[in-house]
Length: 402
Image (cartoon, rainbow, N blue to C red; front, side):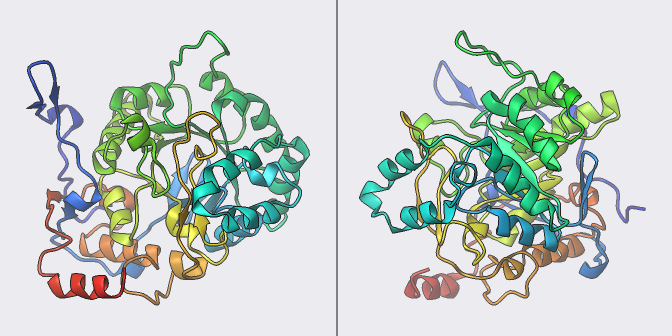
């Protein structure tokens, strides 16, 4: 039983507030992680007593954190390690792991390429075709270790690769694009039908990415089990600069979570909202859940794990695009083991390690026993929250080059 009454008003009760940009255009204010803070609850709970598990369709995840389907993050050993810790890794079926028998050799080449030649190098190595036998081999290699694994592909290949992935034992299919909608118009190829895809598969389907209420609601009505939230917030993504498209993650998560509640009321079925990208430290992860997320997907933080595939480097899924790259390779350096990053104990004080511990502690001080109760946490607009009273810390970090 909840220890407190929900504080969030119903979706339809929010007043529409917009600001004039000019005589032709008005806009509403949107918020990112650095602009908000969580208000402690009237009751506190021992962090050890909170329940952070979440559902993704028929799957039950002990830890509500997914590792992003990026080639600098997830390979077979990483997916196994993530699964053993209770999280869920997403393997990119369009990436280097399914194009090369020895992807480690290619990953080493990417890590060694000078910055002024990296885009061309990435475009070249991604020209090798995906091999279907490698899809089967990679998935089976993870499943032999008895852990859950998800796989990701783009909409154009989803129908065929979904069947291959399910037969190999994948537990979840993620269909991922820069922006995904239930209604896509094209004269050159056939639109993927999520209704048919979800009906044909026995495993849950996650679709993304999305940042808008109505588009999210339409996608939920196709039968998907989860939806990814975020356009361009990732550390290695340049979509916002290249296309000018994106919504800050707190607002985007809240809007898609509102669609989830509407759909839940009309159907009785809950679709998992998964905030994807833009989280640098544990506090950002906590704010994502409080904004309405049921799970989060993380890339750059995990790219710094010793087990990550990228050998200290990280790049976005659209970085190797042949005509319009929308990502860049960044150096994240190998900072800690996956266990320290995910469940601790932390060896640094900057919030980049023990993400689960941060989530449990935040839920405890906000008086939330479950993630759904945590979604009721009061939030305030607080753009000074990172800097208030922290001048000495800032000076020290600058002096250390951090």
